[in-house]
Length: 347
Image (cartoon, rainbow, N blue to C red; front, side):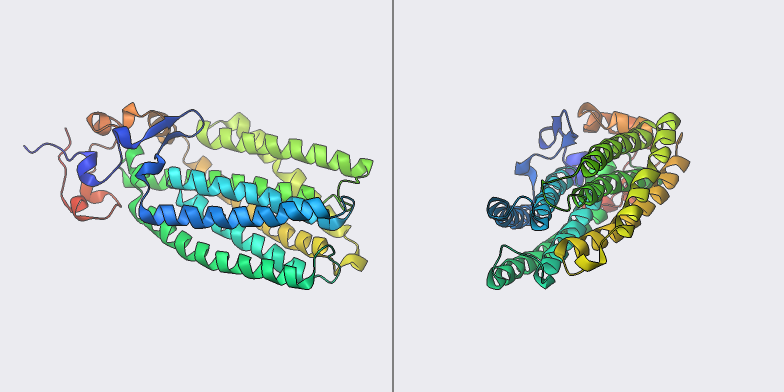
């Protein structure tokens, strides 16, 4: 009887190729990244640094009481989230988060297009606006191409997902859970952006705007924590809180759109608010749909498999068959390559 194939034979990183962290659990070290991942990481990081550089320059030179200052704060806020998507998505091989990063990058570029098209925007010469937009579009095309290749590779191979469990149906359910987690985080970004847009006059806020900002941030954070606990802990108590807090931000977005002043329709802040509101509502609906799918999979072993996958010990070849389905051979794995075509005999 032939021994089972090892992870190293299958091209899956184990042992010294994985690093345990407090925040993220097992991740790939940077030295384990492929050339494609390095190029994607470098180009994406450079694009965000350039964007942050332009944004910081605007924050320094613009009037703090202007709506353009609010617009600059939003750009900075979005860039920070994008950097998290890159790092976490690559180190955990989460193609959902890379896809969210690509959408965020496109959204960021659309904000710049809105800024260029706005006749009201101040603080920049037309030439500088077009230069900034041109640079953003060049980076967008490069990021979309490289990111698309990374997404396709992660989705095809699913190596780190295979470490959690080899059974295909469980991989599908865990994939839905990871997608839900990514959408919740993306929703937090969009809701945060909508809350920033309440600052009509920059940092010169009224009492009402301060209350909306404080309450909105609190509700959004609690909602995100409740969603995370719901899907990872399979907790119905957290699910009730998550469902209850799903509505306030939707109501806020509706009221924000209703109270927009039509005489400011030509401003960048007005147009960006409308664009962000549409995307935010769409993502919130998608989150609700994905949560329903994940909740329907409660009690089917996902929580136990994820808990086992949080330690490096459970991801070593010697314990592979303890945490993976014994009736599923290597040929059933979604990963590609010649090794995947050879059947493995379970112990």
